Structures are given as structure tokens and as C-alpha cells.
Image 1: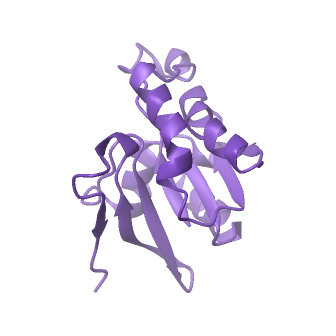
Image 2: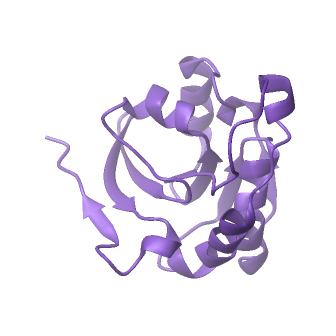
Length: 153
């Protein structure tokens, strides 16, 4: 399973209610278009996303390139209860990509596992646990050490 952080969307807006509508900036739109080739080596049969505009916009070009639809799931929004997120992820097939926010990465993987905007982690299942095993850098950074393997021991 791939867990993707949305691409660049500029600075956070003044309130959570307004920030929900923040869209990708120019750099983010470039990264969104590049995800189709940077993730070409990964089997993706299902794409799910936080309903916030910046997440949906991050995966639409990838979905179009694979003739898939983007499914919107509130469980991928920032500050969602961890149990709700885990329930959603447990129900997804291994060949899924889920696009979400920094807060979700921190909740799921802890603050020690970082992910840049437009970057993704390959998550491996071990029973009901999901462990980050490989980091895929954002497309703009690919070329200078594009993947980092993490020890899960």
C-alpha cells in the first residue's frame, strides 16, 4: 500500500474551515502531474483520498493515467481519530494508494517518520499492523537519492 502526502498547497489559511478549500499551488500541480511516472513501478488498482481539495488534486492526474476513479474518504482528513483511519486502511487492498495529510502520517507512523509534500511511504502489512518500509521522494526530488529503505526491526 502507498500512503501519499498531498503535493504543495502554499501556506495554511487562517482557519480550519477556510483551509479545507486550499488548492495546490503551481509547484504542487507540477508534482501531481509527475506522480504518474514517479509511481509507474507500483501496482495501483485503487486510489482513495481525503476529500480536501489539495489531496484530490494531487491524485487526479495519476488516476486519469491509470483509468481509475478517486474515492473520497473522510477518514483521511487531518485530525481524524486513529481508529477510523486504521479501519479504512485495513479494508483497502494492498495495491491501493491513499492520499492524505501530514497530521495523518504523524498519527499513524509517529513524528519520527517524516514525509515531504508529494512523497509517499510504502506500507507493508504484518497482521493488522502497517509498517513503513520504503520512502518514495516527491518527483521533483527524484534523482538525488530517490528511495530510502527503513529498517523495521
